[in-house]
Length: 278
Image (cartoon, rainbow, N blue to C red; front, side, top):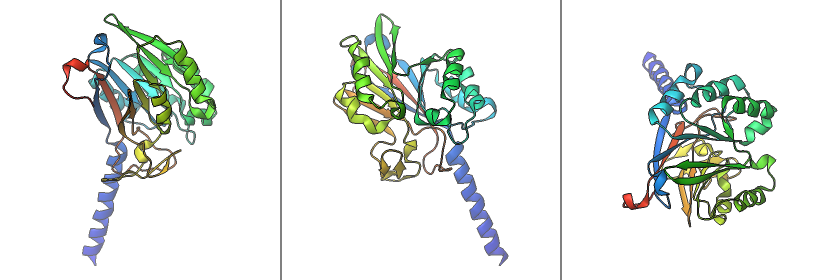
């Protein structure tokens, strides 16, 4: 009898340890993009933070910040759901942001949770005061070594019902032929991004499908339902490459399974320096 009790106790301890690791074992996923990269941006590193949702990685987010610092990014992009509508904590979100701006320039677009929280305006004010470039239906030009890229940001579709039209308007003022990067929250709108001919798109929202199964992938994602198409990694069509981050935190469902929290870093590489695209 004691043997079976010990075995059951060990099983529970093992399961608890596994779930803790799946929710807290922060990882950095490196990717390389070489398609149409301007010469001046060869080696340029873009680190993506998505769906933090008030998750804490150590005191004052020290584990998260250390991982980003060690990656030495040129810019940091936040693609929504920095806070969670169910347990909103602006101070916890700003613990990360106030330190991240000293690592590299930070650019932000909203997700659905910011708008559902009731604290959106206060969050935007605090982000702006911290030195973050807020790209809510806006754009920014980044120059390097004689070349320039256009960084475009779309507010979340929840408050942006004319999403495609807004994107079209933003693109009208863009320099023809210039490399364009879109920051947004929704991967399920991939065909819209392809239609507009964007070079690189950073998205989140899917949480990697929350539970991932070998050879199958994610089980469920918001706005995609069961067995979603866009949950993690690279998706390509035409001239467009979309990067979907699995994100960092959780919301309604409290566990990640085979789906550790993820930072993504994309390094731009001039095409003639590599033999194979991502």
